[in-house]
Image (tube, rainbow, N blue to C red; front, side):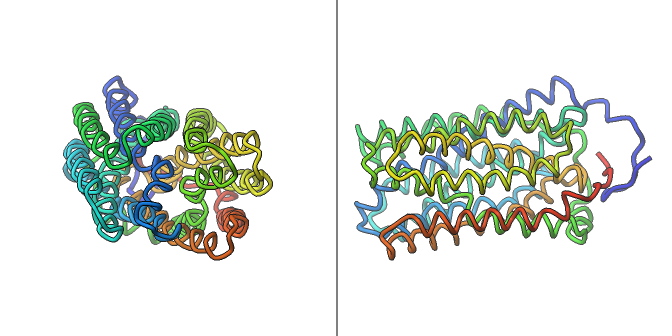
Length: 405
């Protein structure tokens, strides 16, 4: 018998876990994450066109993504709790509405500050509904195969990133960024409604959410995870927004430049699947910490890339693997330390740290404009990602509790 945040359990897993129903739910999560993050992480393809049309600085334009990032990660603390109470399906349906309305309104704005509201609240709200509730749902449906199932679910993020960045560049060149967002509004809403049909409340739900979250945030593990994610998020999103612009400023055409972010997404699928499965064998917390260190090392490739597209491709591929591992392992690390009952609320609280990543994006954009170079911003990302590893090291050397499933 083992004791965790949520109480005591015996050795047997609930009968419905690790079942075919769980894999159907995981497929719905994959489609949801494919859709919402495909739209959100394709922002780099829209960056230059929007910046030029609104005659805005890089920092001000990047703040569009930064505000959406803030909304979807901080919003997760509310959507995660709500999903614990009412189930994930209504949240997936809400994501469909928010994405459609947000993108349609953004396609009509004439001032950047209005876009902060329409894109930030619309796309940010859609991701908040379509992310944390989904990964919490998958975590609750699996015990033996949890890390593998979560890896499959969050592989949707990388696949959406890979597809949407390439398609976005082609659509923007052909029809402009406004029409592209209108297309995504319709298509995204349809895909999210299909995903909602697959979603189902997991058999481990129904915990006292307030009690679970209150117990979790008092543990040292929560503090280590929160602070490390807060530091890391200041660096994580810099390539997603600025890598295409960097490549274009170094003579790369818009299509291949945007595709670099797609490569991050594509290679992240390897990180999500391979490292997610490996985490079940090696220990998810240590592997999670290793992803932070590898991320810092790969950013050094961007620093020395110059105008070499080949080096930029290698950077995108290697960065994507470490980023994908981080995304796949974060829910599993939370489940390992805090249990799966009330996992949506715990993940939502943790991800508020990542929501503050927009601060780093705005600062990076302003530094690029002020210095006329990307070097300072890249160096800052390297230092911050390395610092996040240092913060996490004490936790990675502790044996986690065996929490209630």
